[in-house]
Length: 476
Image (cartoon, rainbow, N blue to C red; front, top):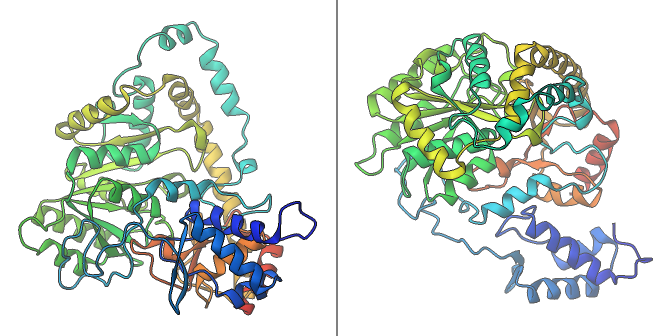
């Protein structure tokens, strides 16, 4: 909150607050700042103070003034409303586009690490640190670093495809969910995002159309846009992607047909939906008929039942490429991910990895292999799932009592909640209270206004947050 006891003027405090949010992409390009009168009421200052603060933002080039309309965050990536991210026309029945994909992907990514206070943050995408604390992880690192092999693998490059022991462990793990991949079909990466990037850089060229589920993860939209891909949003439903929309994209003329479909089949982010067998079969039929590949992002596999439907299992890694990682369940900063692909595809993917990073560090890969082989990871995941079940139940009750509704059946780590108000505006007001929420627009390629928000069940089970939320929402 603004404070009159600060050595900084109220004008500078207010300008700095907006500047920080704009630079961290917590206010999107094109977003309208509150009117002078409304901002003065919200912050408890005079209109003169707000005008002076907005003038500072103008001088910094962060906002622009539109005559008789107000102040807006500057948008340096504006494109026509009837074009996609590459400026090319979309198929006739494509869902309407209200705003271009943000061009400054790095700014969007920086927003992932923003913490406005030490309070629990319902908008965060990972488990709280105390959930992930485990004695077996330090033990695993000591096990690896205490051997003579440490010096050997530290003084030379590691195996190009990744530590062979880890790849054997991962092959066994994949077999438990019926994904057929031998160690030679697995490539380790610097997290799952790196694996997705390897697939994109191997299979796509700038301007290629890519189908991506919507709502979906904002980082994936930004990553593809930064590579110059044409993003084709596919509505995600409870049973899977909207097959009619996919069919229309696939029926476009030459040069406009999609080359790739990116899907989170199990415990989809942000809805929690999981793919049904019937929908999975139809997606694979469509891929075979129209000759596109599928990258299946199974980031939340550790939270899902083993019998969950996966495209890679049904397809046998023919048209699918399987991607996963361990940031959500184990240690975000270990940055270990991997991909699995057909024998004919894995060589091309490995070449792309070598060009970008040469190899991946062996230390944590060997430690992770030990965690898997000793059953430590499996037991840890079981404890997390049990704890998450309790948190989910408590959070749902709090959300409903605060007047929200659930837009999807609660499952996994995230909840998709309807607040009844514009969540972009709500986000700014909640930041004033020290809380970061994830507005629904963040999960759409063109960031249209919406009343939805994503919550993290593990960090949203705080009654104080919901009391503040209800009070702020009712004042909008």
